[in-house]
Length: 436
Ligand code: NAD
Image 1 (cartoon, rainbow, N blue to C red):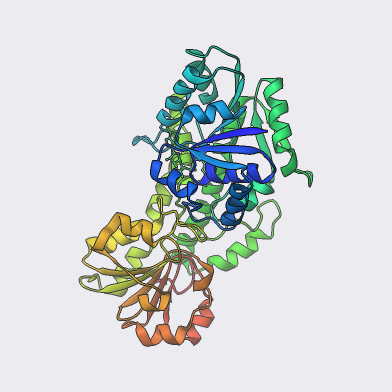
Image 2: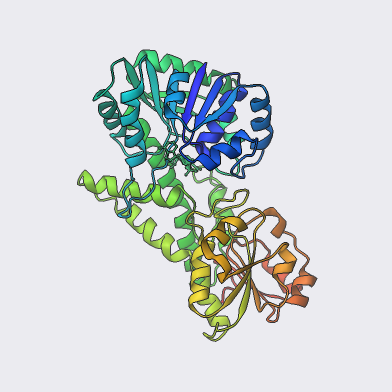
């Protein structure tokens, strides 16, 4: 099939590449000329495990092409995916200007039947808006389909190739059949393609992300309470998670959720509720608790150093909002960096993939190290913000020898309390018995 993808970020590029992998001819369009030039030169512009192999293979096979021209993309594809940003508009609602702006242009350009697929995460009712905006100028038939994306950064290729489910919101039989045909190779193991109306599909994505954000936040509240009463959240987590109604996943406490999706999606759903005169009281609490949780280590750090962080130097391991990505959008590390800098501290940071993005934001306000051990030389203490695998079994002797104060502040609970006692390091984590 002939496919075009408009917007080649984490979602668009993975979508385009994986659809090319199953034999489709794909043109990816992006407004960012620099990015398109890089991709034409065979460079993957983001870090996403396994993407490079598929990317290279499909470019070589001539199935994956790149363009800055929307007209070229629209001429090529019968199915047009919109994988455009829907950021927070500043007031917590989803900014639809990218999606509706491109839709307006689509209406003016298309000359024959197209299926316009909204893959961006958008509020209920957006498919209707897209339909109306295109219809204003269109001289041919078209259908608008809602097809929310559930991939996780860091596992995006795997998630796309083997999705647990595909949700398609459509009221057109013709468009639904085309979408089913396109996705058939990805559900051979029997996972469902769930067909529903557009509004329900749009809400499914927000409901799923908000539920997961609430699950994390609930555990963070339990962790905070554990600290007050001397319970151990790790034990509580295991005790709870073995109940199959609850499940073991997404129960790990820490310094809050970040990233390009959960924070903006929870806020957008809360805001959509307000527009329909519905108060999502629970989501309001999730947003507030998570915001506070991002800096939950700061009071512990301050207490340890008697409220004096002036000229103290901290090593930070992990900057990305989660492991296996270079994405730093809404990363808790950034909130911790800001607090430390505001208190006169200095920072030496290390992250396997995200240092360039953080350096673009902070310039020389913080320094970066080539390795995790370079980062701990001549520092007062170590702070862990992201649970990259390489931080899980470090050389504790090296850490002990380097840190001026023998203390690790761990926002991701990577180590066992007993092990750390044996290592003779002060170890301050989230929701466990030695919390400071
Ligand atoms: P992104 O910011 O990484 O990429 C968006 C791309 O769109 C950029 O390359 C940008 O240059 C391009 N773009 C902007 N305006 C354009 C235009 N007019 N024409 C062509 N290209 C244009 O965004 P993302 O993370 O891929 O997210 C895209 C959407 O998918 C969002 O709605 C997001 O909420 C949703 N989503 C994201 C994820 C994720 O893990 N990142 C997962 C599921 C859903």
